[in-house]
Image 1 (cartoon, rainbow, N blue to C red):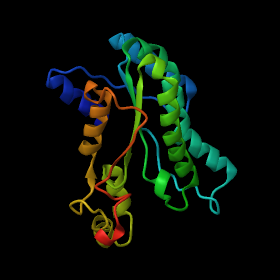
Image 2 (image 1 turned 90 degrees about the vertical axis):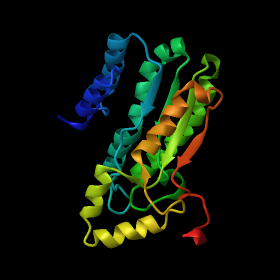
Image 3 (image 1 turned 60 degrees about the vertical axis):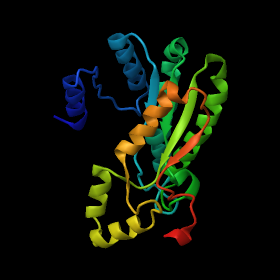
Length: 220
């Protein structure tokens, strides 16, 4: 079983409700299918978390206009499409939207123009939607991670010629506790922003990164 199916099994075993739906989100119709599946199964939508994307290294010198647009589709357009199709249901529940962004939107990275443009646009859409959806009491916020330890990150580190040294270098630059942010810490902030505990929080871009993006570099 894949990770999604295992997660669903774990939630059900813990007497929760969960299901998974596989979709290619670069396909507009697939985005609609995700919303339709959710409403058919649960009868409502209380929140949308936009998280899919890939740092695909489409830069200027080594990229192309075609690859740049492909990167935008992979990293941005499905955020809009899912919210577009989900909005009628979010209006009914006064739900919440959480967009997962990236520090790259504010710091840059180099050689990843498509990804950076997408993440910058996500910050802009968060503020735009927060304003547009005020009449419906729908809140919209973004979580910006920096260095998060995930299986994909581990694979990238291990693909380098000096993985141990590179890992130590990255960790040394995280001010708080000199460690990676965990995926659970990203999830905790996301759950908070979806919940009524953040009932008067909207239009915010929140960094969950151990101070990586903003604190004085002399600290590291």
